[in-house]
Length: 320
Image 1 (cartoon, one colour):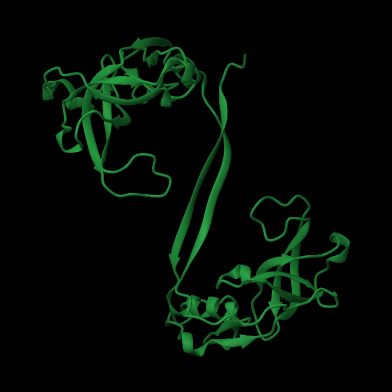
Image 2: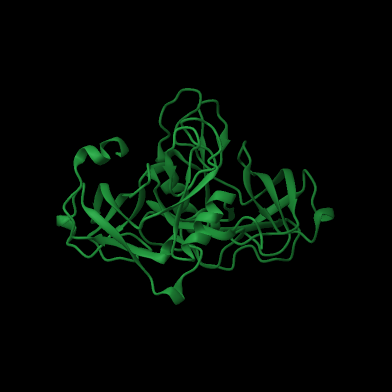
């Protein structure tokens, strides 16, 4: 058995951004099959357009954007031999800085080429438009060598309201490797135990455990089994729904100071109306059925009131 636990994790959410007049006009132009740039005070044209002139700091007028060509020249490039999900192409390709005809600054995008030997600085490329334009940079599906037989534009220009915002999926996949102390904590949960670590110098007990005491800077060498009862120190009532939410609002997320611990940890409070949860309320863990236990904090479904009198404020004041 490995000394430490690890698990794949994913953080993902749709990111909504308002564009403003300049970038909104740029995205609207892409949806219509046009590439627009901003002419700066020094006469240069940049694509994508900037919202403020870098020399004068004056706002760029969206009505002054100029259309540039859909062919251009590769300034520099890097070959992507193993594309990952979400990249412009699902086969090896090049990321390149392309200066479009009529522009003076390059645009970063993908170039579909047969291999790195087919790429070169100075080569001419042209836009291949996406089949279903939606008003985003991905309306340029990618670039191809200018002499390629690939059709450039197989779509009709799309009309509709001006583009004012975009929604971009944000996703981060990674493998989390727990520390030895955290691994012991998670393995304890799989056995219905809550394990913390005690600082040998100040005696504070941390749960979830920490490898070192943040106060004394020494290793937390002593493992401590804690009760699954505790005290609500602070809490908030969640009233706002959001994507991926598993519980119908309103519900309570609270910091619970387990008996014997010196730091509180975050969990759900249920079994009581949200407006009746309070600081000092005594709670106990409600565990999932044993056959559903794993090495996860989700073995504890939530905390619920024990029915005991509220804890005295002084008993948890130092742990807020």
